[in-house]
Image (tube, rainbow, N blue to C red; front, side, top):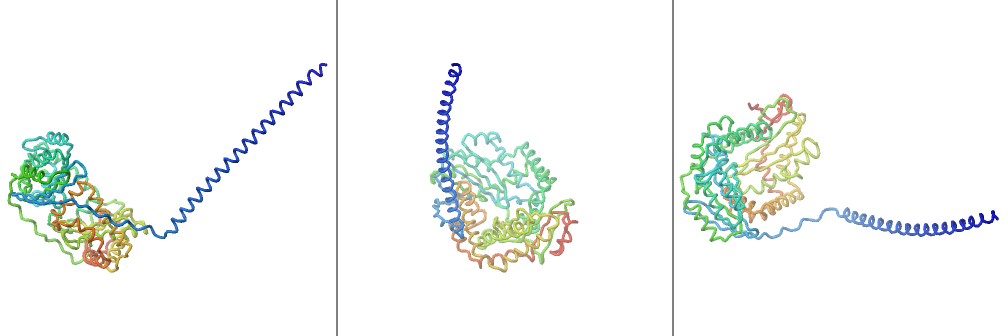
Length: 504
């Protein structure tokens, strides 16, 4: 009896366990089936994705060359009106209604070398302090008034001009012109601001002269332009002490005058109303006789000359090779600009492919065609390890001579054209850039249709014209080479390339 009572539950449990086991196996089979289905779908998706990637890769690699650039779109040039006030101020108005803003650029033909023989640095200091107070406004008042109209005012000095660039919301254009007129016509040059500017300028010069790039460019400008104002970069720090407040006021009274200026205004305005505002704010500005323009008498070399600025302990050499170039208004400008781009003025250039990509001498070689109002220069440069100074100069000269004697390839010329045209059109997308480009026309005495015809002139260039430009301006036989580095470490390498002069 006892045995029977104990056996019945045991049998029942076994039966239950069998049912449970069967249910678990059933669920497991269902789970496995679902898992198999999911795995199959995942594999299918993966295979589909791989197939798509392979198809895309096949189509990509099957294409031997990338598609050509789209043809340039036509440019809708704004109307440009030019007039001259009775006092000689040239006024250029360019209505552009894309944003409710205006940009005014006032250019004065007073470059950094103006009056440098008697007062070196006076032009740079005059520009630095001109917006720090007028006869009726303090420096703080000028800044507060600009903020109140969403405005800005900046002053810059380059080789040819002192330029004041101002901008604001277009509804405040009369106020902006009032401020610009007051700053340029009535600079007070407060003594405290002059003293601060002199201290800051002297410190900046000391810092600049500690860098090899600055020293090399300064020496190259002297070698190419000599006593012309283009040969002046910055004064000796000690000379800045001699520039007085009275000297700055005299400089401004001599050079900041309407018959030495061009005012370009670009933005959202009505031309007749804007012209009336310009007449109101600048019409009473007094014309004065201008100093004579310096004669362009540049140094000449009968053979290549090397100038070395010795920096004992330097582990690398900074190299610049330079030659004279024409003024910006020359018809040779566009061919030379494009020739420079192929040689070293862009990342795909011959110089980069040679001494960076092929030989690994340097990270960022370069070249530039810097054409100015009176004269210009072509420059090629690189910074390299001491031990490859001579080989680098050899390759730089080799690539210059190759440009002179061999036509460039169609691919090189097409790339340079695309880069030039695209870069110029990007520059013209903003008010400020357009104002600067138009100002350049007047500073450098370019034809008034320069911007409108630039694209067509670049597009029409031929390999023969590029080669002719290189033959004319890549003068490797009478060039100036400036090297900043440890002369003891490099003198034997550079001696074969020309007479060496160590600059103190």
